[in-house]
Image (cartoon, rainbow, N blue to C red; front, side, top):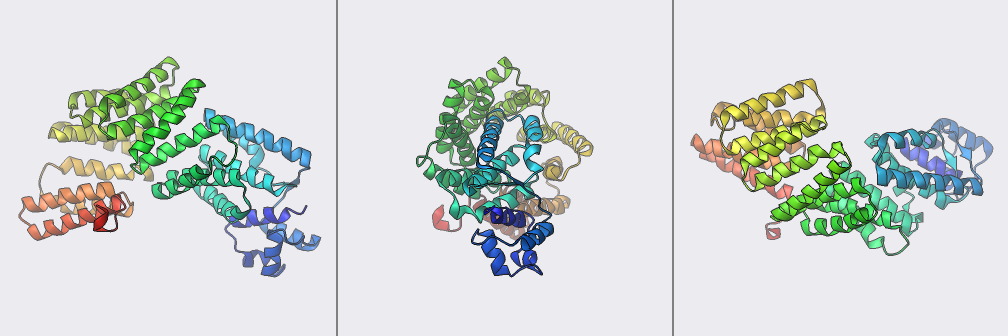
Length: 429
């Protein structure tokens, strides 16, 4: 029972409770600290009071039980990562969510919670719950071995990626990269890590690294007939290739992904593949071909956010052609979809559609709309669109000979551009 302190500490941090709050009226804070760090075993009375305050029940495991238990969890962890069958994982995960287990070996306690960390990410558990688990594990990190440090930083990198903190994501994943040769990893684990690393590199615009690591992951998935993960890699690789103007290579990657999704009836991939093919032709100014693929994407199974992205892509394509009628037609379709699917995460599209519906009017009465849109994207830290719409407003000021306003807005746009690229000093350009 000498590892009860770890369970208490984990539960306290996950409940966002300070030591002084837990200890109040039960024991001193210094005594609680010793309990949590396994420097002393609490008396039965103190232990019971701490457990009651935390509303914490636990189940003892023998050494034999915990090894069997951890082995079973590892199989679920492996299956969840390779297959990504969310509904099945959620169902199986309830066994572990409903109980707290007291491990004989503290290292097994850490590994157990690191597996749970990744499973929570796969099943899209509430992000605050996952953050509390990460914070608790971080405070125990000094006791981790190399494999546990690898798991922690990989999971933290994925969490930061999901939270759109892309720089922090890459920092953690590159720590894992430094650890990868210090212990044994199965091939599927290495492929999974390379896949995660490539996605993080892509979000940080490190395109050559993206291609390198997505290719490494892809080779494993192809050789082992893990086609869903291979499709993921083809898409990531294609995006990076398109961004480096390797259009033919990008098209090949997307078409390989498309063939796999068709051959194995993975309909869930159709929308994203054709969306990317549309964008590929958009980059080459082939408006008709781009719109053709976007329309196919709209007719494929997708979620609301995917449909909104495709509608927005079509609007931008018609905007390049200054086809006002089509712009307004598709903006209205976007507004209709937003009415049926109101969600805070889709708010950005309200601003996009409103801006594009007036963008070519050159009417100064839309000044307040531009300002509110710029403020929205600045507050969302989406500096790409804050920069884009600031430039458009600056152009509008010039059209109306408001040169001072234009100059100030261009300066603002430049600040957004620096923020977008994480540039602090002029010398970094």
